[in-house]
Image (cartoon, rainbow, N blue to C red):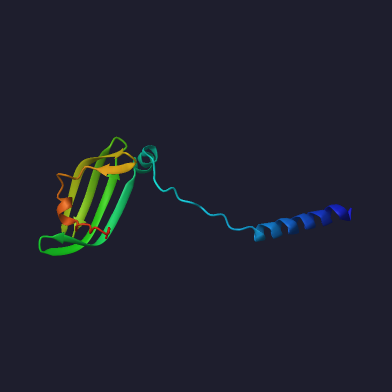
Length: 120
């Protein structure tokens, strides 16, 4: 009768020893997303972005934009820069594994500081 209990104890000690000695598993992130993955990720999503500075004429202010990605490709951007608040209706799509936003006729381009060649 004592044998089953002893074997259970040995089994538990063995499994615990193996688990503690095993190296931790590493999760690797995919380098790039596919068109389908990006579409699934953004379709119907709402994303909020904030920044410390935006340019409004000669002044500046905190920047906040709310991206609303419609399931049908519609894009709504509610953004504010300092005391300036606007809404932009546009479109989004995925092409060649990249998320694309149509902002060419938007005043949003005027208030976001340009990106330097080093990405900052």
